[in-house]
Image 1 (cartoon, rainbow, N blue to C red):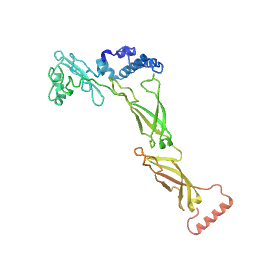
Image 2: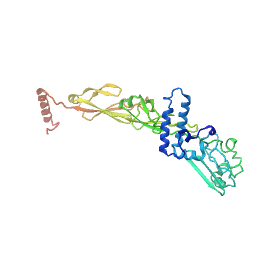
Image 3: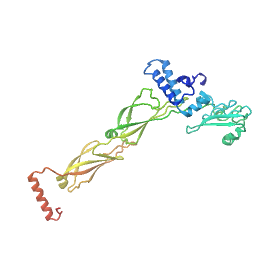
Image 4: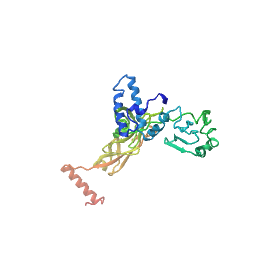
Length: 358
């Protein structure tokens, strides 16, 4: 594979000592030139666009660039190990390579990628490098491997899969995840919705933004994220693309407060209804309902409406509750007759000792 690949520096048209800014400038220019939208149906431009993105993905990453500068395409080749010492070494095992028998054991170097995706390099000059590897890995393979034996050097380690080297493969690298924010309204969070979003990859400023339709589930809240698999940065060496993570921010709605799956709203009740009792109309997230008001209801009383809250993200059959908080309406435009009646009411209550006038 590596023998047919063009040099990444040649692909971008830059020298090997180009700095990060020069690499980015070259990439933006070429990405714009060969973008499929600008070259519909042009297979050559399409391949160039892929090559440019692959080259930039490696050369824009300091760790990958360092490996490429040292080992070339072999660092990302799935069919061979990478990292050559003074004598070809065994390849594989998640990217091990270049252990080498060495000419007289003079120099050994290589690199590997650990399970968490971190790249590591090793360099040994002179001495028994094999002893060091044996100490580190010997117990895993039933003893210390010596050059020329069933260890790291010579004909390789006959272990996993029975092949030479550890597995006979290098490594592939998963693409990076991308992050973006999406703002939705209170009602959209309650009922769910479909949003059309435009994403601009910060590492590919020369590429036209991609437009995606995203389904927002009912019940989502601020701080939650939606993962779109495979919509992040492309991988290298055949690795899978990263994901796109959309962080949700829910807007506020006047008169409403959300606490988990429960919601709180205000309901205005006439003074006379609060005194004598009656009914009042309450707005819910799913339509209006009529609620009974007990006689003598005070301002601040909470009316619980079961199942009128937010739907559960895990189980759509489960809803929170709504609490309607009573706010008593105090009349401010009474007629003379109404004022007289209230005065009489106040006098009666005073005589009965129900309350004292200020």
